[in-house]
Length: 103
Image (cartoon, rainbow, N blue to C red):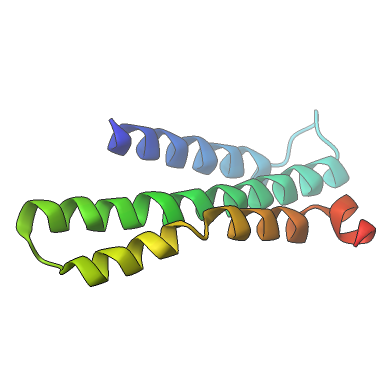
């Protein structure tokens, strides 16, 4: 099911960027620019949970099945996963102009 979710999300992001790259009468150039910028920002914001949460869990799951890593390495990987909140908050502040100006 996770593969299906990632595939669908990838398709919708690609489709959105494709539609924004086409010239249309219904959207001004400025609106198209802002929508493209928003889409890129959202992709950056979603990449943090995908890489910091799902990546380590996939490695730990594969290691549990195959016995590939020792407990020390698994603990290190889980420590990376615990950085999710800090990294996500930092990305949100960095990509949201209102938050950046407040700081």
